[in-house]
Image (cartoon, rainbow, N blue to C red; front, side):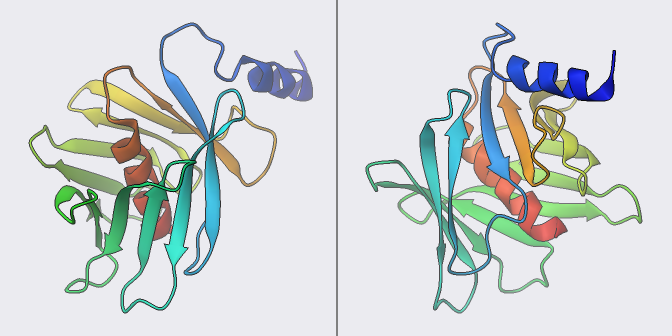
Length: 179
């Protein structure tokens, strides 16, 4: 089967595998300070807005639902040099801390400390947006560009029973820290 035909088939199968997983469409290099972007679900509906807050001492990104209600925010840690970011709930309490674990020329590894939950490991090719997020051997989310033909677009597929907002926020943190 030709490469283009396979790409078209992959595009059509986005969100239709019947696995019960939820898929979202993301844009790479999505946010610089002051920029906003939408995260869409598999039906192409705008589900979450990420608002890049300008005029802050440290970089802040807010996740907002379509009605404008803030769901969580991402803060760059001040004490470290771009090696960790935290995800906070609407009350300013930390729900996740994303840390760069190993720096290598080809494969970065990240760990995610989840408040009141198991630590997560992020492994794969971060720069190419082909990686998985898991609890030990159990994969809970996959990030991949193979579902889209658009150059700057990638997908996040999340297993049922996960906190989609936190997983998407972790994905944005990784994107920010890797690029």
